[in-house]
Image (tube, rainbow, N blue to C red; front, side):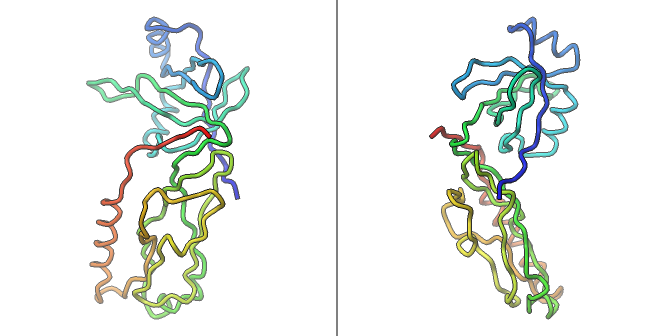
Length: 217
């Protein structure tokens, strides 16, 4: 099932160059450019508060947006660069790339859990530990899943769910090339649960993948 792509509302920017960019900033907006997709580059500007809120939300560089500009057709874009003030560390310019429906992009997809009521491990006092509440997948821009689902019915304390046991959407592939853990059933507190949680956190940190890759196909 395709997920809803979040909207990002921008304005067409009249004029280019440093003068036009400075004017946009004086008006409380961040200048930017949209390129690629076989069309001419489009200068835009985004209200500073809107852009800053999205940056604070995290994973801005790996989120696919539906860019809405008055007078232009909506287009799917992904941010390729955010320039920042060297002193204040605030955004001063953004670059977006248009994506075709057949483009491949790496995005973080939420993990949905089912079967908790039928999980023996939880009934015995264990708890579900989400090692990866999101999984980075390489997907087609025109068919981005809303979520991936794991079923924990039948799992005992100490059991794990790895990526190999998950049915991924057609054309999707995990960006990490090994059978990593997504979730586990931890023992009750006092029986090693805290240690298991720490190990899971270390595993996630070791597997962080830095940049988002996009390819046109």
